[in-house]
Length: 197
Image (cartoon, rainbow, N blue to C red; front, side, top):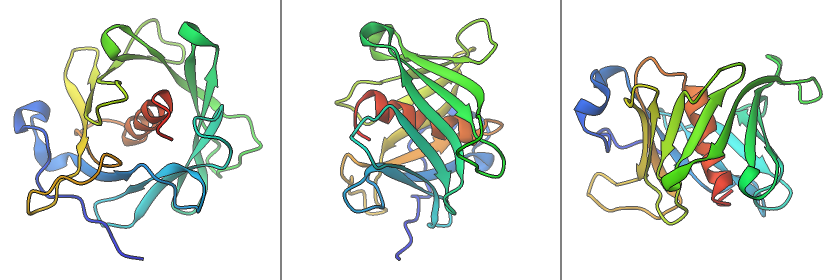
């Protein structure tokens, strides 16, 4: 299988994260690696598959699993509620990747005003992250913490020659000192919110 390399220059400015040396770039392909499946694949800086999401049911299913390259479940995402009360509950799976064991609640996401989303950590009192740009027509979005600092940014992938790839190939840049699994989980939830998974 061919490796996919992230573009060395990130789409965000150096002032967005402060120290760019420790930020991580991923390539997110919003297509399943399984024939006739729904999901996405996340490629690491080395170009190999780092994580994957496969939803064997219908697009935008009620439950999806975010897995590592070996197929061990890392987080479970469940859609709860209906209409304007819809939210996505995210739980960490057991360390051994067991899908049958009860997962530990981690955070929940619900739509917010102005086309965004609010993230509340389990046991927390208020919003700790916001996702800007959850509009289904735009691939670009930013994840901000409580202080308004950009901790991650998603944009359409651009080749070294400057060619912008399709809307299903994205570059995710995660800032330093941020839980990368949390940010990747938020990108998957955004895809579920827009029914692109």
